[in-house]
Length: 223
Image (cartoon, rainbow, N blue to C red):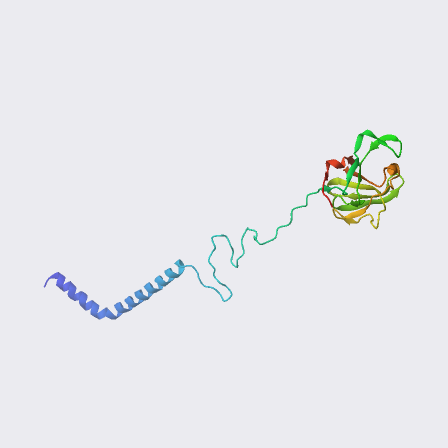
């Protein structure tokens, strides 16, 4: 008998005597392999577990967050604040100009019977109505012999308008708000230094305390 045959015969006898142990080793190896595969699968897969109060939602490529909200963008339906109203000055009456502004030259005053500067413009109209030239707050209300009944209105951007030779000042008082186009009085001849000119409005404008020509700012607009 050859050496190989003798070796195989001895190995066969060894397997028969130890077959039970080999089966145990194979079972243990199989269980270990299954456990290793399960662990590897769990660690490589993302955790998709959720609790009862959580809902998974796909990411929106447009940048919207869950629930319909947008990140970093304004709601197109949300109303934007109005832009500031531009300050304009309308004519304070529906009438015509009788005496122009004369700051650097003299005009003749029939009442005073002399030449003098004229720090505003004079206006007349058939209905005698006087209106606020722009939105503002009343800063002066009064009467004196030179100016007659008068009202001053303070506006934004340092502007002030003065309405002189009024019939009266009505119920207006300092601090009252007035809107552009509001009727503030009637023309009269109450202005002592211009009473010979009859019922009219003597209208003055100031910017930051300095007198200006009203015709440079007024917009022709009938009431």
